[in-house]
Image 1 (tube, rainbow, N blue to C red):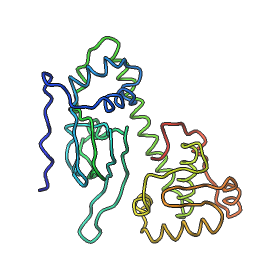
Image 2 (tube, rainbow, N blue to C red; image 1 turned 60 degrees about the vertical axis):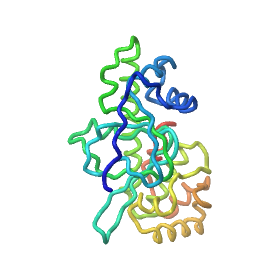
Image 3 (spheres, rainbow, N blue to C red; image 1 turned 180 degrees about the vertical axis):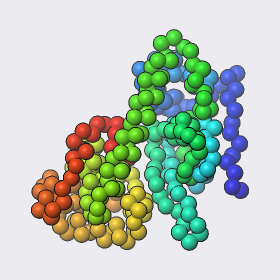
Length: 263
C-alpha cells in the first residue's frame, strides 16, 4: 500500500518511549548542543515521539510535503529518485545516526520532497511536528536552538557544496579523486570508511556500477588508492600522481571541518 503509516500524535500526559541511550544521543545532537539535559528532556516531552521503521519502510515519498522532521537515532535511511519502470531508481544519498531529515524540506519553497526516503534496515527516529519547536519559550533555550538550527542548515549546505565540487569536474576519475580527497580531509586519515556500497557510490556519481568498479581498479593499478569493501586508502603521493597526469584541483577540502564534507 503506497501510503505512509499513520503518524503517532504527541500526548504530553504519557511518557515518551525513548530509551535512556536514545535520550542521551539526542542530548548530544547538534540541534541541542549547549542546552542542559533537563531542557532537552522537556523539549522531547512536549514536541517529540519515538518512531520505528522496518527494512524498506518508506519514511517520505517524493512530492509529499514534510509535516514532520526527524533525527535518526539508529539505523540507516537511503534517498532515491525514481524514474519510469525502465530507468528504475537512482541512489541519491544516505542518512546515518545523528543526521537530520526533513528540516530543509519543511523550510523550503514549495516544501515538497524531491526524493523518496527508505529505511535501509531497522531504524529508530525522533519525530517532531514540522513547527514543533517554534513555540519553545524556555528561558535561554530559544536563542540556542536558533543558533543550532543555523549550524545544522549550514553544515547541510556545505555537504551539498562538496558533492557539487566532486560532480562538476570531469572525467570520472577526477570526480572520484576529489570525493576521496574530501573524505580524507574530513576523516583526518589516509584510510577511511565510505558509507556507500559500490552500487550506491555509482549512483552518487551518476554512472553504472560496472563503470565505477572499472575506474576504481584502474586507480588502484595506477597507485592512487587502495580499496577493500567500503574502506579506502588514499596514497600520500596521490597529489603528485594527479599532477603528472594533468589533473589539477580546486583544493576545497583544505577548509573542511569535522561537520562538513561528504557523507
